[in-house]
Amino acid sequence: MSDQAHTFSTIVRQRRSLRAFLPTPLTEAELQAIFTDAACAPSNCNTQPWVVHVVSGAKLEALRQVLPDNFMAGRISMDFPYDGVYEGIYKTRQYAAAQALYDAMDIPREDKARRQEAFMRNFTFFDAPHVAFLFLPEPFGLREACDLGMFAQTLMLAMTARGLGSCPQTALGFQADQLRSALQVDPAHKLMFGISFGHPDPAAAANLCATDRAALGDFVIFHDEESGNE
Image (cartoon, rainbow, N blue to C red; front, side, top):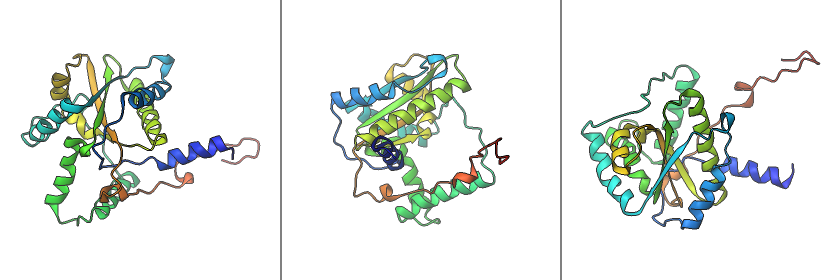
């Protein structure tokens, strides 16, 4: 394996969803560099169908104050309603991921209050100093949503390469109208999700969580017509 491939493999394997951050903000130069790298993500016909609002400082603190109250009061708005159903192995993986997180935080299954408290930290961005909100312009749909996902992965790898942490949060999509209003976002731009990011807190129990990955043979089928193997 070349040094370049080894470096990339290390970065990919180091990226995890982190849920506790130090308050230290990134510099303007660091932010510019990260998002410049992310802009190299692929997209269908090079349409680059993403609009990103990066929020920091006083504006982020204001959101940190109001979003939890909005959610608890039932003021929920979603541009992309969740209608997925996890069954079989996918449900098993979902449960295992939740269990790994709560085990790392030493929260027993029966402690519903602490589990709810952990979930609500989504709306205070896990104390991160920055959040990127990813929007998809109308009238784009599923194909372009895949492009947005590739942009998000490239963005998070760019952060990991610089020793930073991130957490993609579909929960932030529950506050689409509220965020559009607060950030003065074009109504034609639809919120997919947000990514909290910054310097990870090395002392936080939540950041010790590690989830399993499926074995290669569980999801990749190699077709080799010459040998007759499938």
